[in-house]
Image (cartoon, rainbow, N blue to C red):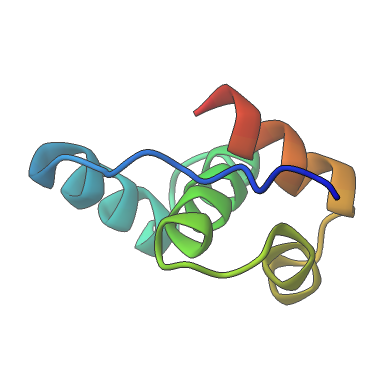
Length: 68
């Protein structure tokens, strides 16, 4: 059976910065997408669910799960 990988708990400052980025309309689109991926993973969503919701490939969500 595969090992379940979870995102570490976000600090208050990290969460605030990611939420600000996710709502931004002036930041680069790639940064906004990354922030949405990390926030979705932190909320307990599965990587494939986050990928479908944000509109990226599943591998992108898994990559950010492992990076963050």
